[in-house]
Length: 216
Length: 216
Image (cartoon, rainbow over all chains, first blue to last red; front, side, top):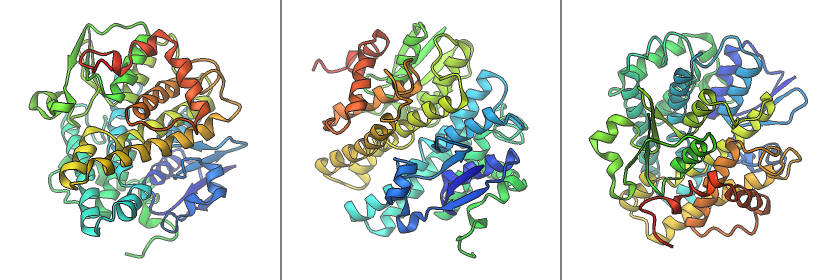
């Protein structure tokens, strides 16, 4: 019994959806937590995830799993095939490091609670808030592009197999697209994201393919 | 040959210093990257870490390791004793999840590049910037406090052995202290941080014990 707390637009949940797909796991239940209506703050969800963020995952009797990268590592440890991390420690460090450029250095600056703070506490106009989001997306893309010029990069971020780095790169790409970031300066990033999206596991997990997503 | 790129005040580097100490590793060289003078933007350091953030670690011939959590996992895989993660997959997920509440949900909002953006691009006054930092520190502390009421918590965040969660909790505590966050609402967090700081590995890694730190 797998239960995923999800929202179409959540980029961190997109990552977990990709990992589930790659592992051949179908969630028995997908619970919609509407981030745009603030449902993550409801007491019922706060009991699920005290950080009031998505995603959260229930596997069997629980307890609830939280934080996208921790969930993906858990899925990789409990369902080892196909592996989502390289076999060698240095390769694993590189894949995790690339994943964390997305999940620690960039995406946390764009999440709903931060966008809400910019709008309501700081009263910043929309154009300024959009610049903010684009700035942090582009900063990480620039670092990722430099990393991906390394010969350790292959068809995917690290060699020729999908890793947690590709999962995070795909989520960064979806965020860049939401905010209209010019991908021109990031050809290696763009190539790998395009390759990922040719895989059903990535394509069917995409935010715009989820229930509730806008048609465009 | 271990080379650590460090700055006294960097909370992410504090985490790696703790992990090195716990593993009984002494860096052969500590290279100071003065974040307050912007030295992380120098081309020489950008070549080390394209994200222009601390820490970075060189172990032997390289390549350079980056992102604090990825570095700590690498140290744990290459020097398994004492382990920094629980043995069971669910325990590992919980320890990683708690670590990521700090490293993904809270600390990224306080790093120099974000504080600089608030000051220079958004021209926010100092009091507003301090409120920002305190807000995100407190949000994560509140979620961590709820998690730490769970019976899986022991002397440390997860059971009675130090894990990556305690390493991150200690860094969160140091950040809370820098910004004057009231720790009254977080007794479990405070107890575990105090227990950690009784250990030499944590105490000697503390920001205020590093070269360049202010005397107070």
